[in-house]
Length: 312
Image 1 (cartoon, helix red, strand yellow):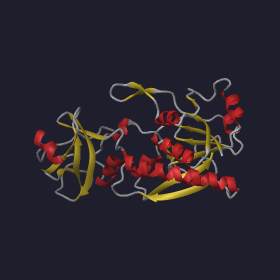
Image 2 (cartoon, one colour):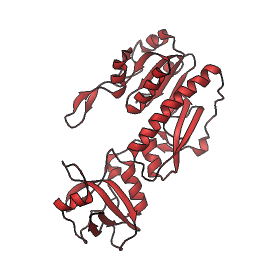
Image 3 (cartoon, helix red, strand yellow):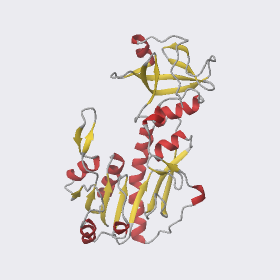
Image 4 (spheres, one colour):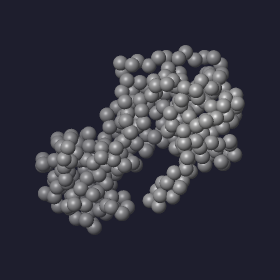
């Protein structure tokens, strides 16, 4: 099929590569403009842009899809379909109606659950047992269009946002190729979403990643996993901010929320609203991620020390 592809990060790049490997003609790639990134804040191209350049594909990086003449340029391509994956710009109605078969979105959730910007993290935070990929016919709403294909995957107890992202990126790539095959064969029956079951996955705020030790240990552990790799669950002790990258729920001696109740090579055990949490991988400002044993060798904590609790 003749495709216009719109996407920006690695999640989208995996799908673009799968479409090319499947033999589809990608006539144009749309991706976000280059932006500052990393510690040095150097202007950086998106993962999709780098892949498009590797394959020598036609490329556009508009700041808005409402810019003058863009709809005319897209219409002139004569695309069968537009595939959208984590693009980051809203498609105006004029763009949605251009491809012959409309615009398909690769969404990383089992719609209508977790519409919005952060479905992977919200699924982990909520303790969902499964998530998946939905291929959706885009309309003017936010992830509200009819569903064309859906595949599910279990969320493992040790999944982080990164590991789950990688699994879903691969699944999304397979799903969009499968969906286009069905579309070519006319085998699709679009299914409307159940509005009564819809939930919203808002963009992550850095303030959400500050640990509230009054919550139960399982909730905090889910936050550690959901905010890995970004922005990183964090808390302060002795005035020093620490990031927690891996933890484990345990049952240990009781203490006040945030209180260190034990330390050792296995980790730093901290009291929560109920039960305790064993902190296993910790990072100091400007330092590298360390196992608990390595961390304690340079920054000894003692039972009775206390992490600061959030002031909500």
